[in-house]
Amino acid sequence: MYFRFVNLYENNLICKCENASYQVEGTFDLYLTQIDNVLKGSTATLEYMLDTDASEETMLQFITYESERLGIVSSTGARGIFGVFDGKFLHGLGWNPENYDPTERVWYQEAIKANGQYVLVGPYFNKRTDEYVITAVKMLKDGESVIAFAIDYETFKKMTTSGVTADESHMVLAMNGAGIVLANSNDDEMGVDYSVSQDPFKKAIYNAIMTNGGKSTFTLRTGNDTKDRYIISRRHILYNLYVVTITNEDAELDDLKKSAILFGGMLFLGIVIILVLNIIALFRDLKARQRAENLNAIANIYSTVLRIDMKQDTYEKIAVAEYRTLKFFEGAGYKASVMMKEAAAVVADDRSKADLLTFTDLSTLSDRMKGRDTIAQEFLSFEHLWQRARFIVVERDKDGNVEDVIFASEIIDDEKRARDKLQYLAEIDQLTGINRRGIGENKIRDLLKKNVGGMLILFDVDKFKYVNDHFGHEVGDKVLVAVGEAMLKTFREKDIIMRLGGDEFAAYVPGVYTENGGNQIIERLIEHIDEMDIPELGEHKISISIGAAFFYPTDTFGFEELYNRADSGTYDSKKVEGSEVTFYKRMDSGYNEGE
Image (cartoon, rainbow, N blue to C red; front, side, top):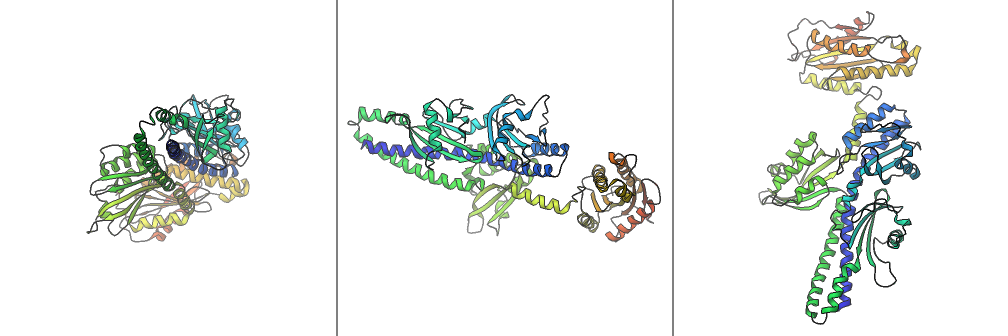
């Protein structure tokens, strides 16, 4: 009976160890997946920039933007993207120390060794933050450039204890494929190499992890007898990282053995009771393990899953993977309606907060879901990742009102950004970065249909053929790009600017109805044109010929007529040397600025 009981208890320990490894794996996997999304998107863009000989300033602007907008937040804040690109060290947070050779740093050297694979490097001492960090790195396809993303050591340390109680008989390791410990739950073994350790225990653990016959959970004996037995459960995740839970089986069974030896005969009945209780606990753990496996599969899609009782205003937490919202879902005494509002306010970026608060308002949910089994809302999270929130009806009352719903959210960042990129490529002129003609004209037509009055200006670059013939088409393209930049500096975000084709451009400025107001804007444009700096042109100055016409909210003519009026002014301006504007003369002028 005793040995049968020990066997059951050992199986129970194995189940607990596996459940613990699932929990730690889920924490690491979610965090590293977010980093992986940022790095892959940034890597693709930077490799494209390198292929197209983008300037150092352009690449720095990009990684600065990604660092500010897309940084994964760790326990001590976003670390930002940095690396070596086309021989230059660039840092998205603006760090640029003197006498710093990045090629001598371990993160750069390990990335080159990995030959294009994403790897985790460290821990090592970071010169910028004066603390230890672990860095995700990748060599770009030119064989010399390297992109990197640093994570503070404390974040990794904290994840090794997520959902696991670390004590003398339990330990959690985060170890790379080479056997180097990145983080440890019990002692500070940061950077210890288990593969070459002189400690037989550590060496045996490394060998067991690498030569376990494909098993994820197994028993390790490090002594010559039955002592020194350990239960090892390991999970292999992104960046060739192993998450390993180690349970000292003998320490767990020590009290049990002593009790059996001292009181086995006298407490037979007690042992039977304990046996029954442990069998029950075993089945519970087995059931919990099955549930954990199911939830782990769901977690690949949904980062948050709740079941909400609308009548009782209560909720049940099924799965929550986001750090900042976990405290709300685990708090005591929260009503579902209050919890959803507070969680939405924390999870959403300021640009999406109002939409998400409206979407998660449980007081209006039943009305919004009439005739629907599910509704969804896309939003930008505090980590600057796009997510999709969804309500799914579970049960309705006899009147059709929602009684129970499932709330779930999933990360759709790759999907959303791919859609946005396609839309951007469809709308934007790739040379100048402003609207293409068809898109710009459609936007102006929509405003005219809504009687949104304003000023249309058309202009082209004087003697542009001369520039192409005498300085080359490459310089001509630089002129067009500079004109597009001048327009972006001149006009407001609500104004519509576009390239008509060749060296012809146009802009529509809502709310401007007089030559006085129009001249102020056009003078700014001409000033920015004069400030263009294209060294290849030498003493040759760029000027533009401009035509302008006004559309009043009471006008009934269409875009074509407005275009022809402005175009006639362009024709007249060409007769004057240098930058010049000609306004179409209307018989009526009954509008003031801003009407």
